[in-house]
Length: 48
Ligand SMILES: [Zn+2]
Image (cartoon, rainbow, N blue to C red; front, top):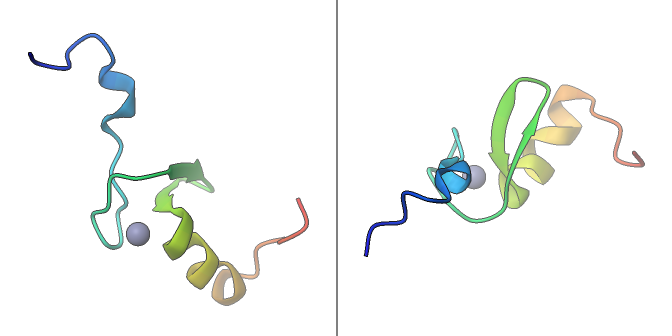
């Protein structure tokens, strides 16, 4: 069965292409792992 009903979860990590828990933040689609790697470089606030 196609998963057309819940196409919201179609987001993909822009960095590694992972389709796990992808966050849309700061205009980026990053999975948890990539987000943690990118955060320090981009000076994100880790304590949000
Ligand atoms: Zn990723």
